[in-house]
Amino acid sequence: MTMPRRFRVSLRWALLSVTAISVLLIAALIHASWQHAADRNVRAVVAQLNAQIVGSVTRQLADLLGSAAAAEEALRSMFYQNVIDTSDEVKREFLFLAQLQSQPNPSWIALGFPNGDFFGAQEVDERSIRKVEVRDNPSTGKRERRVEGCHVVPGDIEFQRREFAEADFRATDQPWYGRALGAEGAVWSEVREFPTRLRPGISTSTKLEVFQKFSGVISATIELQRLSEFIAQLKVGLTGAAYILAPDGRMLAGPPDPNAAATPEDRMPYWRTLDNGADPMLGLIRRGLQDSGAALQALTTQIASRLEAVNKRCRAHAVSPPSMEWMAVEVLDSR
Image (tube, rainbow, N blue to C red; front, side, top):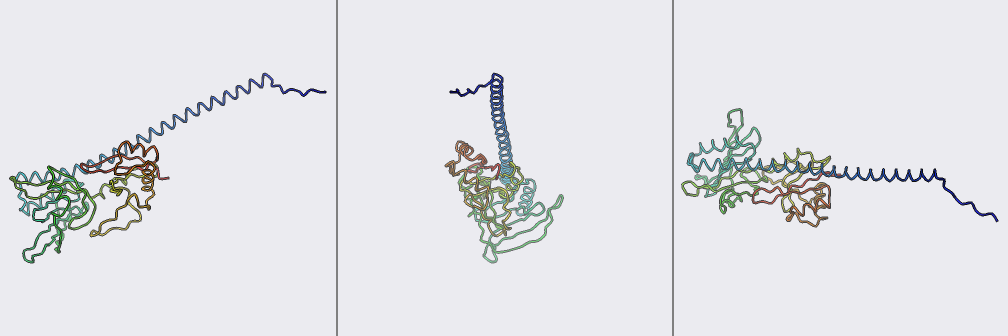
């Protein structure tokens, strides 16, 4: 009976096999080490980019708020020191127009009187300014709005036209007026209504007292469209975007909606919200919040970290103006 031949491996093949396996193991270890280092470097770069974006949004917001606060304080100081009387219409108009031109960011600077009358200056665009006044007309017994359109030229302002219309606008009904009455010093509030247009904005306002007598409320307003124009210029990842959201999910500032039609001045633009499924990037933020079990109203630093851990394409940071709760959220990549 013939015995089967045993399979034998020569010493040479054994050494070659051991060497090949060793090389493969070392290559795998090196690849894993390099992959780990690359991932760590990518995360570091993303974190650095994210910090730069948040820093840019925060600085821009601070500049916008600071310019409005400076305009408001300059007006309050001039009236408080009785340099100009609030009833001096000619000097008051000159002061408001000068302040509006000296501060590039405010959309409105205004004075609300205790009887509900209103006087303000509005920057329509870089070349157009309106002087707006609403008060009772003694001859008709009705409230009347006077609007004077002006064209800005180097070193001067040219009058263009004057329009009169009935109006029911009262300064005392506005949130910026009411919040200032109950506050010590300046206070911020969201606004949307002015005599000539409906637009969302943020306003700083303060009580005006002259010789310890209450004379009205001064406000400076920035329309949120100006913040959106800045945010739209930010480059976030390859196809990402940045947003500023209110606690209730409204988009206060962000990239423009390409499908949105121009809104007339007498209509309020519609709010884009997290619940609006038309914007895929807002949908990513909504899903990130749902996955993390977080509500936007309670989005703290800790919860924001949880949001990052669940949805790597979203980052959330608080960028709140004083007395308000705003959140900056960056979608790093929409793909």
